Length: 352
Image (cartoon, rainbow, N blue to C red; front, side):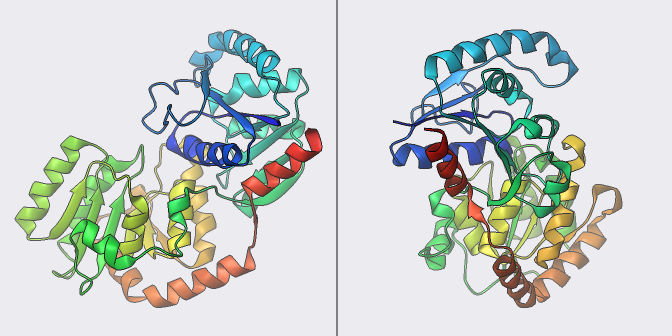
């Protein structure tokens, strides 16, 4: 039986696709082990579903003293698990594992989700068999072989077969009025929570809202605000059925995480994207710029945004929704890509 070690961790943008790939490989009878830092405490990680191993690691310069310990743990892990292939998803939490894979000469495949890949991906790309890139723009920052790959998404994010009426009923919404989806991701919800209600005062009264607030406290505050304004809104701290949220949405206000943007493109939801300015290497702005080519979104930076400007842009995007969806379909047809599972499967067969 082939064995694959998946080096992951960090934010949801790293963990989500790595766990999807791990589940897919497991279904194919491949022995999988997910390794990284702080997996036990991660709200994104279903520990009962996949075998995992903690490895010591910390981000930034403060994490340098932990590199030796983490690398030692990773070397022991590789000696014990004996993987045929290591797949790295970036973030500093995966650094010791990728270093150990290089030292042990285990074949390495990397996944670059962002238009400007993170430091760990850039550092290890010369030693990888291949770096699969989600955005074509990422390839110019990679040393070594690259291939355009499709973002791994959970099975329920396949749009075919989903029923919009069922999704509307889940949120208690009407099909007679447009729906605005607001979601700030795992890090960037606070700013959108503050500016969205101010901008929505200027939008048509009939618009319905699904707002994923990021915390219970923020959700309670927003419920009170929308109730006072007379807006029909479903506000939740988090949403497990995000495929339903995308399915009901006619327009979206989001950050520019790679996973979120891919979901938006799959469901062809036009929107306004506000990149999280504190993202590493400003990669969210680079993601948004790359996504502009699809015609599906418009971008506003925090430095240039105000409620009036946001409301006007949301209204413009809503009114041009059909045209934007058609552009997005043509964009997807022009940029076919292999799934990450297909890419990894080829290297497993080569290595085992």
